[in-house]
Image (cartoon, rainbow, N blue to C red; front, side, top):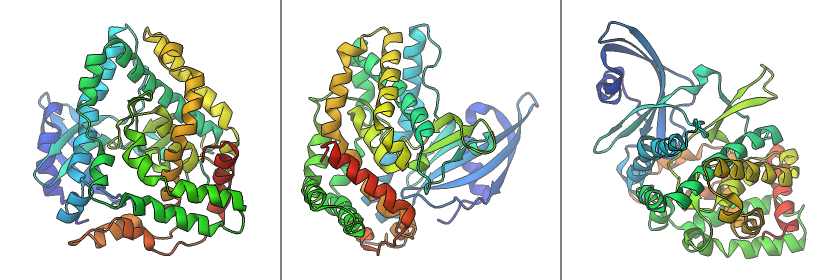
Amino acid sequence: MDFLSNVDIEVYLKDILFNEKLKHFLVQQHKTGQEGKGFVADVIFITVRGQTLQDQSKEYNLVLKCSKQIPSLRDTLSIKATFENEIYLYCCVFNEFVNFQHDKKLDRIFDCVPKCFGTFVGENLEILALQNLRSLGYCVNDLKNGLDVNHLNLIVNEYGKWHGISAAMQDQKPEAFWRLSNGIQDLWEKLSEKIDIDKFFGVPIEQICNLVRHEIGDDAKRKINKFRQKILFIMKELIFDRNYFCVLTHGDAWNDNFMFKYQDSDKQKPVKVTILDWQMSRVGNPVTDLSYLVYSCASTDGLEAFDDILNVYYNSFAETVGKLGSNPHTIYSFEQFLSDWKVFAKYGLMLSFAAFRNAISGKNEAENFEKNGQNVYDVGGTFHNEVKYHDFFKKRILCVINDVVKRGFI
């Protein structure tokens, strides 16, 4: 990315920070090594120091999430719609969910998204100005370690709240819920029209399975091959089936989209999580969030606690729905939740193979996307790069494959 200059940033911030009532401000950019690593966005870390109309000094530590500007990239990856979604979540959905809780005389049950200070939408550029969580002591878990049970329980507890608010609103105010939901664009539907979905998800499955072919049995190989043939059904039919219980999902349960605050400096006990990147949010079954999280992020020890993690999630969901005045067991019983895992776990598994493929490739796939985004943008083709071998991922991949085969999810 050609990063925005301070002059450019100051121009955009006049609109973005309009509600902060600053009469003048200065911008300082910070190089962190995290810039330009996204598929659809680049990030800029800045500090803004200014004076309010009442001559009070204010300082803001912000992350500017800026859309990619390459025309072919914006078209193929539906980048404008991607940013419109996230802006809609921050400016509308989150606020409506908070109002629904306040109507029930409750404090905010779900409060684990970064503060959004404002947005900018132009012809070929969109920007969100978010709180820099690193300045508040948050950090991302090391991808190589995976998420242990403490991290996973913290996340699924928050997912239970998010899904629970969604379920209670849908139960009590169905018209308001569906009006709100209809404002969200389904990005998988848009992407399916522009990229080869079968190739996009199929190649990672083939490559990952080839990586562990000597460690898995013939039965597992047959089941994975059968699963590979279901990609188009999963992405073009299953995830759009409204006959199953649906909520507003997060949609992007990848390791780097969770930032944790810890009790101590050794970072062994997380006490707070914040969930990032809401652009893939959509109406879907709760298991689509959970299966993606568990299969792509869990450490081997975390995956062994599968049953306990599901109980933590459902208890959080049920408690939230109950506090909001609905009957969780009527809306979505624990038995139905477990049954849905047999249906929707395939979705999370499919995304986890793509995530593992990217993680062990030894290359920045986002950079490959941008470099190759000239005229014809073959997204699926980027996954033809040679997969490099990493022991610390192989153990986790084998654990995931053995788990889904043992549980009959594929």
